Length: 348
Image (tube, rainbow, N blue to C red; front, side, top):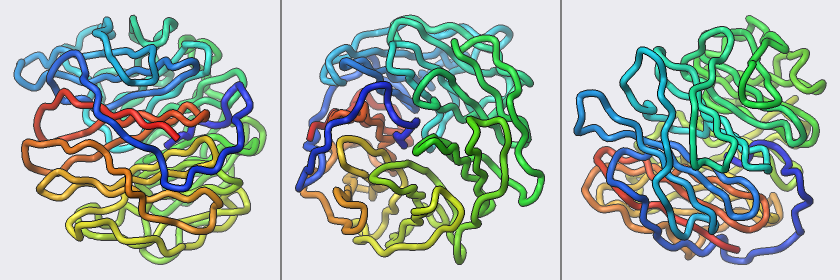
């Protein structure tokens, strides 16, 4: 996921033959970490909450060395709401490459968060109208965007504050839930849970229905890279899936491509990101906590990577949500059924 459009810099074309090499890093506190982001010059952030408290105090962390080490950050304070960032399963944050970032939430009582110093300090930001289940992305040049489940409006801001409507999604077909959105090749694409996609070629001003996903596939995450759009199939998140959905005409049509199955079988491909000439997909874990990783460096041939994400112990499933800075550095934030203090950083 990413995925949030072309970076402000020009990525160097590079072929990585085994996918990113991953290592574990330590977040500053134990909790349910659920969202992250990756900017320029090594800046990254993570957010979450502590489920042991009735008020769910929020957790935030930042890194200045590509996710190798993390420090505690100041989380946002949302008026009239004591809760933390609700669990997300796909990307809902965006960096602009200059240290500014926004993060959406899945909580109906809050809107979003904004930082101007690379994630060290966060403040509440009010999306208009009040959104829930919000997904945010960046257009690669000068504006953040957001779209939300149940709302036809698409919002934008240049600063992370002062959001206003810039466009309206078609009412047919229905989005269901917004499960992903990003920018690439001058096109914005929003993926819905009802097999629907939406496209804008004028920076979010006008939107039209894109191609529906084929068969029974539904989206769980989306990324742009290597001249194509790739959607991860979320039709069965507890069972092995061997297909991704690809568009090579900027979302006009979509087709399924066969990829290696995740191992073990009690897992499914779920999260995706792109950068440095790679598209990388990881799976949910099985009960032992191990995740699978596949990648492509040519947009055609998908390979199983020998480089696995760190093992997250404690039982239950784990979903690593992946982020890229576009220049060969990656981070992973694990969403788990229990608390954890582990993150991952990758290089290629």
